[in-house]
Length: 194
Image (cartoon, rainbow, N blue to C red):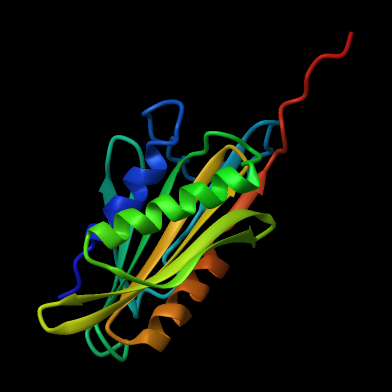
């Protein structure tokens, strides 16, 4: 069985960057489509394939997380995808600070017994600053493959961690979930001019 220890680590590491310890508010039904104000960001990830993925919420103090577990025989190997949504400390992360954060997350994963197979790299995902890395971990005599991407989308951030015992499925699942995340951003708050 795949465990989600690194997912918790990733969410907590990113949560430590927040200026407040509160998790982002959940949107009420229909609120995602209402007009958005400057300084506001909305994120949504719905279960896009209920026959393949079973989802359950995992709330913590700093992040709203959802685990998507692949149903038996629906994936080539046991697989889970963890989505965490939290407040972003800034709308525009400094590229060097983002790379330092990515390296710190990868280092903590290595301390948890993971072998980093793709060094942390920064870039953009869905038009927003992001970082990603990949790892393997031996658990109960089996190799677990993981790929993580963290995106700083306006006033919110999210990370997606895909874990599977099948390396190709890990990347495919990460890409599917990244495509399914919906982002609406009102841009930065406007300041009054004098």
